[in-house]
Image: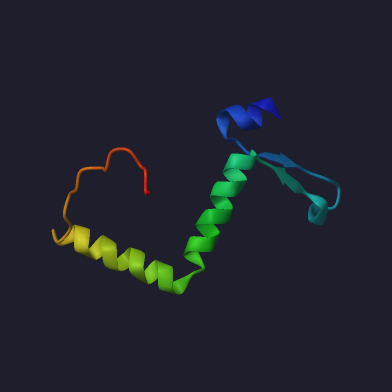
Length: 73
């Protein structure tokens, strides 16, 4: 388990019946995969991402400094 968490390598646990094979992965890798699948399965969000990417590629994006603080009060 430590190796799976340390190097982000998934562990394939096989069984006699291939249908019973499982994959062991770190929680952070699982969460990342779930987020990626959510993004890829959301057509509206993907359209916005593609539109933004085209704007960046065509030089229409602007660079802004990050805001300091973070107090929204």
